[in-house]
Image: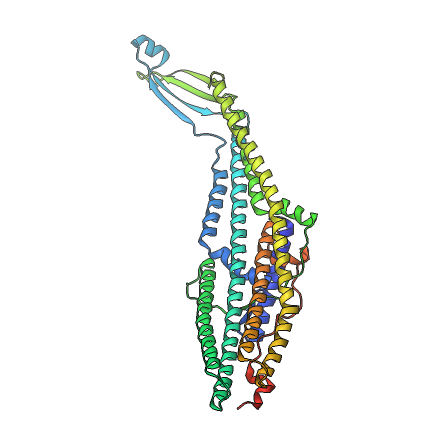
Length: 455
């Protein structure tokens, strides 16, 4: 991994220790899904995930393949005999023995070793690519789990609000100030919210199961309550991001290694035009008395020129594979530019939507709800108006947290596309989380001053 990413990962691990200490000090069961927390989970996933362990085993196999390349082939032993007249056998010897050794000429073993090294580099890059993909999936799943936690919390607060409103309506009904329609309306709202809350809780359980699968934990392993981080800063499309993506994107790293592997294979194919040379030593003894009669030194080689057309076809095949790998890389780089631009547009849209709900719609909805509710308590508005404004506020809160989760979901993909390692690198592209607090939680009617005057 390049020095830049290594530095980022080191910073992430250091920050992870600080985050763990902060959570432990707070003594709560709530964890904010920060880059440091995700780095801890990613480290656990790297160790435990079966797919990563499988890819690591393939990398080890490719490493062993380098050591398996032989510079010297196994020698060939020769044993034979001569069938001839007694005089010839006694003169030349009739027991033949010797050894032959293929010579490592023309750099052929070195080229084979280069192929093995290129294969190792490709498998290493593929392992890193798979880890980065799973890291993004882990981050996105964690953000979805934090979103599901927040949705459940909003649903529980909303159900509490509805319970309080039902008490008010029941109190009004006892003194003849509430109609049957109002009673039906609050009962329907309560039932719908309770049903939706159960659905949201089931969705939260599913996200936790997905997290456990990625970390190879037991499916029902418990999780703390996850919180979404603050809204991240704005990201703009610029040449620096494009350069990062074109240079460090994990998939292009795999493709570059595949090009080098194809070039190494092409070099091996070209060297096949040269012959293989074998040196040998033979000796002869006479079986009658065992005396040594003669010895000889031999050199043997194949004649590849008779297969010149076949060898040229091999070369063309490997060179075509090199060209194909280069074109795939060029196509991927074009796709990266497009994907990067699309991710930034979507990230900006999610950020603007979150800001819209946080800074404009939610405050207005809260103010309107308080006014309408006060008017209803004073007999100047209908109960339907109270429920309608409350639905707008509820939907606005849900839309806000969904926009924040979507922004981080897209930022996780953007980090992968830029090859920046993890979300700790967001400050490098100007997307560090803001210090602004998230939208306030719904206020229970029991805490509203106007409620104290109700029966």
